[in-house]
Amino acid sequence: MMLCCRRCGVQFRRRHKTGQIPKYCSRRCALKNWAEKNPKRRAELNRKHNTSKYGLTVDELDCLIDEQGGKCAICRQPPPGVSGTAATLHVDHCHATGRVRALLCSKCNTAIGLMSDSPSLLRSAAQYLEDHL
Image (cartoon, rainbow, N blue to C red):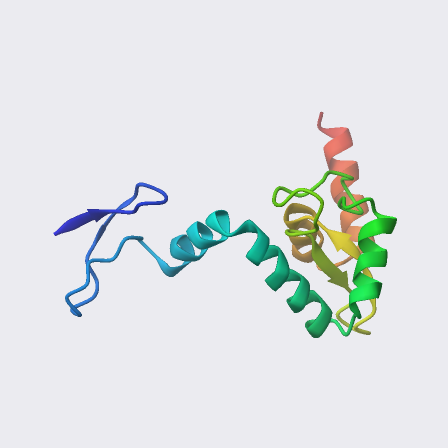
């Protein structure tokens, strides 16, 4: 029997033989649906994660958020999410030393991660883009 995901609309087959009919095509869709419906709780959990995983105090995290005006340190855009919070900003850190650098949006955090946190590789990518506009 084909089902339709309540969040993304993708059709999927029922995978569980528990008798329950799943509402979402994947765990990821179920979690995204929950996050969209519970933005304040998501912000609280993100804050707790950022303070515990990276050894930050609540005051240190608040200081980073205030210093950056609640915006990404690279693109300077506010993250989508709960107004007045850093609900979807990620703590950027050096993987070699563990030192916290700043707060980044998901796109910027992913971009520098995919470029192996390499300044020379990022400069090369920027030069490539400038040369091929």
